[in-house]
Image (cartoon, rainbow, N blue to C red; front, side):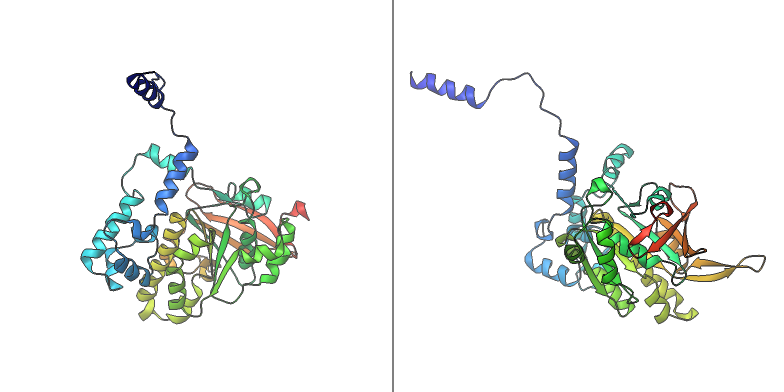
Length: 351
């Protein structure tokens, strides 16, 4: 074979002719690329050098999603120059494609959202399958109504595989009232067929002693969430520290501003990491026109506008609890009974 003939043969092998169109990218591949962009490191962004990255990390911005959803004012208040703040925020937003999209594209993005089971069949039915990721669900009620018990069980169910209603992920628990009890996790883990020890290991816990401490813990949670595959973020209770430290009308505006920023940070984290957000809330009695008192969640319109789903938990007869859905962007109001037992939150038929 001559040299020219051999060259032609190699070229034919390297560039085969075909009339077939390239295969379309699968939905799974699209989702993989979508999340790959979301988890870009800050140092991968154009114009973000090591010195800038260190400054941003010290300010609490360690991941692209946290930076993309930050404001210029937030960065400048942390000592970042205004020009630098504008530049890095713009680059971060490009990386995760923050901007106008079509409603058709939005459907594709929303298809990545998942539902987390409560572990209680009728409770899930009330919520149309469970708690939605990339949103905040609020459980409010009187002391002892069962809000924290629900949070404990969610820490377990989030670790279940998706085919069993879980998110195959871990939980971050921010405790502001010292009510988290790991012993309850051990009991509930066995109910769902999970190994008690590893189940506890998969819950990242922190106790906040002041509202400023609470804010700081959540501000610095990005790395923790990414490193530990967090798919559930709980703040129990979100309002307690703010209520005790900012009492009186003269502090109301300051309290609400700080609370608003805190809850918006939680929402950003949930959207950035496709996690389910949960807060618990206390109640106050509000009289109606007939002089009767009805429990209402604290936090005013700030909390009401930020959370997507609100569930009121109240005590019933014979140790029964009632969960009432009072707010949802897509579901009707309704209520369902459940019981809190030694092994967890169960529907009546399971007892």
